[in-house]
Picture 1 (tube, rainbow, N blue to C red):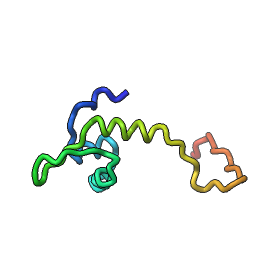
Picture 2 (picture 1 turned 60 degrees about the vertical axis):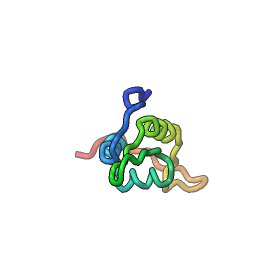
Picture 3 (picture 1 turned 120 degrees about the vertical axis):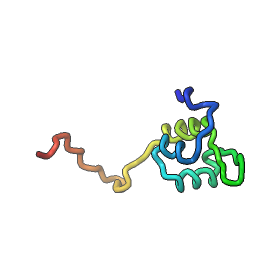
Length: 84
């Protein structure tokens, strides 16, 4: 599915742009080991494309429930019309 990014290395900024996350969020994902990164120098970090693809695949299968939904209570249907 993500064959074009596998095997490549990304800077935190380019990985953040790809994942639509900030640089700080990328570094938090590296610290929590959700993304694997290589330290190439004192100030050079690269994130593997394989770990980005695996992260996206993990996030794609997570089923999210609405935050405001309480047990036994149904949410009203979402209106399909666009307000003028």
